[in-house]
Amino acid sequence: MRLFSFLTSLALSLALASAVQAQVEENSAVINQVGQDNTARIDQTGLRNEAGSDVLPMLQQGTFNAIEIDQIGADNLIGLENDGVFQSGDTGSALVFNQIDIDQLSGPDSGGVTLGNVIGSIRQTTDGAVDGVANLLIIQQGANGVGGNRVGAVVQQQFDGMPGQRAEIYQDGEGNVLDLLVQRSGSFDTAGGADAADCCVRHVGPTGADPVLFDG
Image: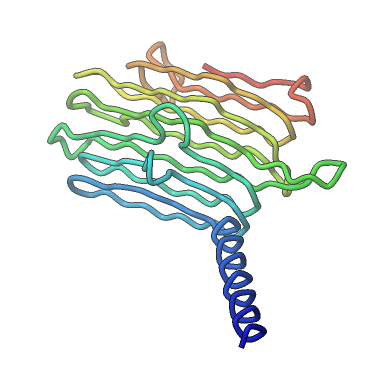
């Protein structure tokens, strides 16, 4: 009887440990959507990828909004710092929208340690009706399975009656860091006119010290 009890306890302990380990290895995504025309698509493929959390869920509220996240490898993190991921376009205008398009990937360093990519926080808001694009963001980070890049925080804010912004960030290599990007009002002008205020940042290389492209 004692042997049976011991084996039963051991089996339960192993099952519990396996369940906890499986939970640790899982991908997770938490998003809240309020209002109309909110959409979200999240694919995560690998292990331990996180987008939002129970404590700090991604939030979309207002008119349109859209989030699309991939991640693919392991240990990629989105929106677990500061205000997390937040989009608001609640102005009652059908022309207002926020968009986010993220694609992270990841891979091991020379020592075989997995390097995930991190995006600390993204905040995009439209504070009034706008005749044109209001906010937009595209982040790529690691190409060909590379990881270890970090974007600390991005803030884009469109004021009432002003055109919106556009930001594109690519980091391709390993260990690149973009700490903070802030754009308020301004516009993305396809003709590159005086009102253009889009931003393109690109780091390529293993240390972030290699050539940097910045348009803005």
